[in-house]
Amino acid sequence: MATIEAEPYPFELDPARASLVIIDMQRDFLEPGGFGAALGNDVSLLRRTIAPTRRLLDVARGAGLGVIHTREGHRPDLADLPPAKRTRGRLATGIGDPGPMGRILVRGEAGHDIIAELYPLPGEPVVDKPGKGAFHATDLDAMLKNRGIAQLIVCGVTTEVCVNTTVREANDRGYGCVVVADCVGSYFPEFHEAGLRMIKAQGGIFGWVASSDAVIAALPANASKEGMR
Ligand code: TIU
Picture 1 (tube, protein in one colour):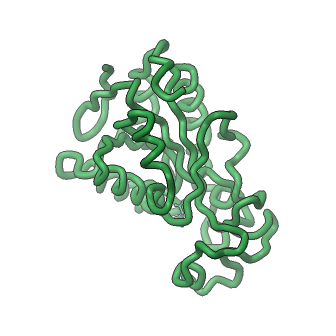
Picture 2 (cartoon, helix red, strand yellow):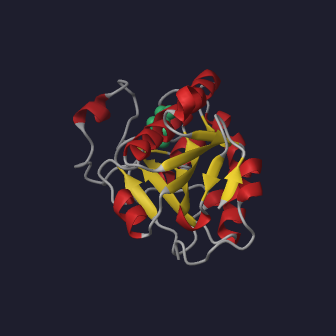
């Protein structure tokens, strides 16, 4: 066991039962011409998350911690896209429409893939999710349970949308979640702040919040390699 300095109080980490979960660090959200931009956002606001996440990812890999990546997106035939999601926002260019990085938020297209800086290694599961939460209509819960994972260290975008939704889903399923403050980001700085506050308020109603430095300090140089491999 190791202790992560976190809010609202220190988190007791069991590295053999923990996994790093990186939510939706896709070109569609972090690069111009994708879904994030189609929604009217300045995608550059998310890019400060890349360097600290890369650093944490390297340390986690070195410590033998399991890593799981997620991607939001839909089947090319859009059969898993709810009509209410497709029409939401009255967008000129929306989900399934062609853009500079291929069809927006569609699996197999360039924009749907994970940014080069954080690209998954072979053997690291990638969960394709049709919703905002990573547990909805995916096999994430089964994979975590099969590997004996009970604690999630959560990075990714956006703080108040897919990160918050996933942490709430995870919390109800019994996982202890630590959200890494500098490794999550939003197009709206005020929503980022509120999103973190909502997680850690009321005694950690949904989970804990810590810096990447604090998580790295708690990760053993020689964690159990059996945990997720
Ligand atoms: N991954 C994720 O957060 N999906 C979104 O649509 N986020 C927005 O902030 N729009």
